[in-house]
Amino acid sequence: MIELSSRIFNDGFSFNCFSQIIQRNNYTSTFTTLQFNSILLTIDDLQIKVNNKLYHVDGGNTVLLGPQKTIELVNNDTKNLYIIAFSPTFYKNSTKDNMLLNLEIFSNDRCHIVVASHFCNDKHSTLLAIERLLKFSIKDTSLFRSVVHNTIESLLLNAYYYTIYHKKY
Image 1 (cartoon, rainbow, N blue to C red):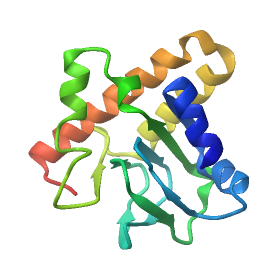
Image 2 (cartoon, rainbow, N blue to C red):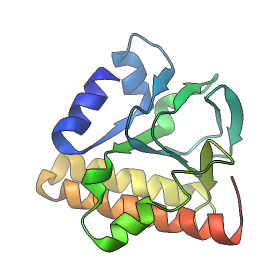
Image 3 (cartoon, one colour):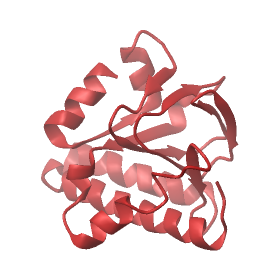
Image 4 (cartoon, one colour):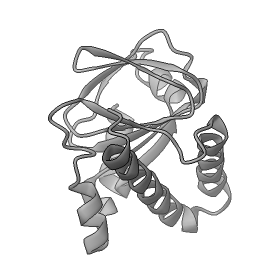
C-alpha cells in the first residue's frame, strides 16, 4: 500500500482496482487502511477478513471501512473490485461532509465494516459508479477530484440510509 498511501498524502484520495494494488505489493492480499477511510466497490461476491473476522459480501454492494483496519481478501478474483481510499481532510469541504464522516458508518463499535446495497440493489449501479470514475480519471482529470468527492458523498448517503433503516452491518 506504499504507492496508494503516498497518493492519498499527495492528492487526498486514491481510486484503484484491487488487482493492480495486489500486483504492486508483491501479490500480497493483506492490507491496512492506515488512517484513511476506504470504500470497496464490489461487482462479484467477496470474502473479506477485517481484523481477523470473516465477512461474505454479495456482489454489487458497497463496503465501508474506517481507519486502522487490517483487511485480507480471501480467495477472490479482484479484477472487478475497486477501492476509493481517502483522507478525512479530502472529503470535509462543508459542515454536511463533516457530519457524514462522523456518523456511525466509519466508527461503528459493533462491527468492523458496514455493507450497504445500492438503492436499485443490483450490480449495475456499482458498475456505473466504477465506469464513471474510470472515465473521468482518464479523460478529464480536471474534474476527477470532484467526481471522486461526489461519488463518496453518494455512497455515504446510501450507507447512512441503510444503517438507519435496514441496520445491515
